[in-house]
Image (cartoon, helix red, strand yellow):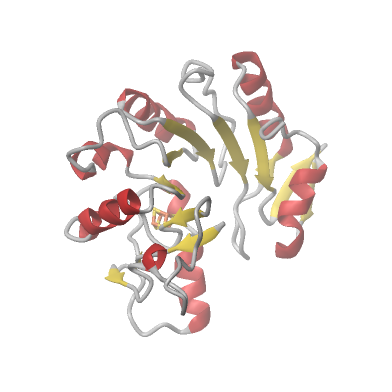
Length: 242
Ligand code: SF4
């Protein structure tokens, strides 16, 4: 899997953005341009790079994680996105996925030949609380998308997704906590409850990371950054990929 960030920068739009890691990392690196200013990066054409023998640098079958330091559907990138769709079409031998908190913008951002979706593109709708789930999920389910993922991260409260979960429409629900010094704690009971909802609907489930603070059996644990993914895996809740 390869990160592909054709633009960098974002502005906060909902509760899940409060401690956004893009802002945190920019502050840590002392970046000169403010994080809320969206700009193109040197990686704009990354999937088209070739090696010295003129072969693709990223061969057929590669998977690209798109826009992890911005939002693929952010307004400021409206003039650039058309070229990204062209690249995705040109590299139909690779797969691409992005997560968004702006799913309501998807229809106006799609290429004219999108039809019911490109087979090599998966789109994840992020929901962090019940309010955003009830706003974004009906929009998400109404859009023409071939591969749908739901990303419950950072999970800020117990969320009921049961009325939206449908194994024919959603390929995976992935849950994660919030990282960083000021992270809001994740209650393991909320994670278990989401797993139960997924089981009832037959939707694969993944607990991808604990976040910095995990509450379990009434006790709060601090999980160092380097253990947040492995600790989540150790919980043994994952049914995705089986
Ligand atoms: S949408 Fe994502 S990248 Fe943008 S501010 Fe929110 S958390 Fe950060």
